Image (cartoon, rainbow, N blue to C red; front, side, top):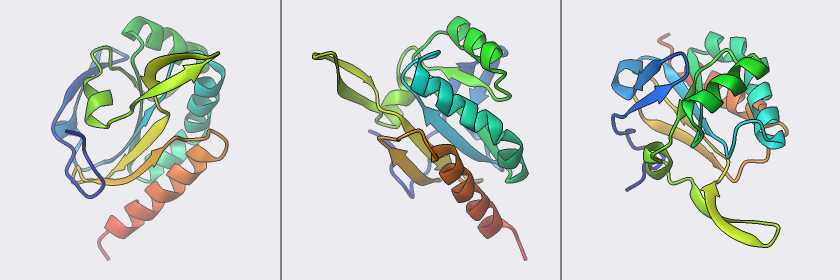
Length: 161
């Protein structure tokens, strides 16, 4: 069963770069952006990751942590992260636990061949662990900026007066 907007994201643990274990429960109190992308070091995924990188300080200022997620290995993620100077962690979802939880695996076509792959998708989770916004079938240009605007709005809405 996948999580839907307005619902609490179930607790999960996943391995990320920097030998860090990501534990959903431990991240409460901060907003989260989880962006799912098909593959490290491919053109669209590189551009998307660079866009999140370039706005990283603004995400942090909005009390929002960013995590990139794909089915690539930790080793692939470490290389990609280093090459692109990504200041946030990448989660290796090699067993597709998070892909299933967020329902991002779709039938795709490439050069006439069909295969199951990640549909580029992003999820914004509030400080209480509630999924507040989902973007599916993402087109990269302008996407990181749209997610940032939503994160800033959610952060301001969650601030006590």
